Image (cartoon, rainbow, N blue to C red; front, side, top):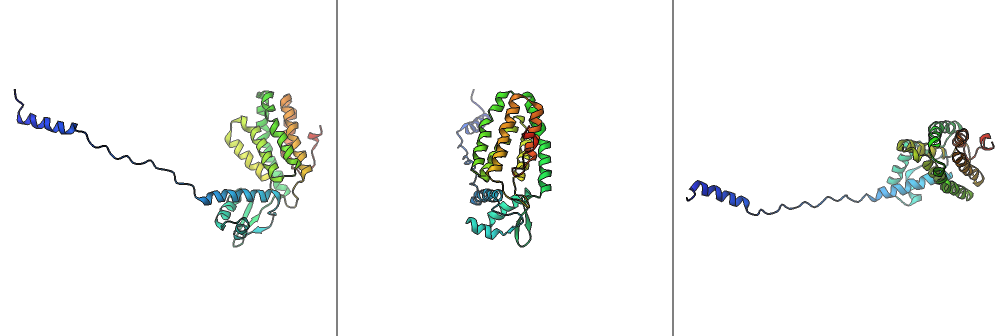
Length: 250
């Protein structure tokens, strides 16, 4: 039986639908544009400014203009202003309208208050870790503690500031609390700023501060919780330029 004209027409439409259709053009994957060069320059300028603050090269109470600093570092004023705004948000410098940025510095009261907050944050965290971590875990931090002493012996303020923060960051890392570590590191950085009035610590003070890391680790390895609490509190509340407290001579 021959197909009717209608059936033939339907078959023809179906055949056309089954023909190979051209493949749609594939849209090339989007590529992330390279980061602007000025962001890289900004990071370098920010690092250089942090170093200058740590060494006292940028003196507390002094005002510095962005163009002057830009000329000093061989860059445009834009990344300098961006870096300074970051330091403003951290409380390290403050904006002076139509003049530039003033290095804030820290008064004795500022340092005491920062130390009190650090102690409230770090000491309980270290005590909780001391109750549950094995001694081997603390021994793993020994190379970091020893490196702080080596850097301190050279009187390298910038290098010691970094090594000191690294030790404390790894000390708190087993908490698994990223926010705690971030806040503790930011507080630590603030305590490393120059005081007004004051002078940058020398190698002797830095070595004394660095050796406290090893003493604290000894107490953690022994599992001596009272000593851990006493030593940790004394360490974070004392600055490298202050005399060692009784806790470290006990």
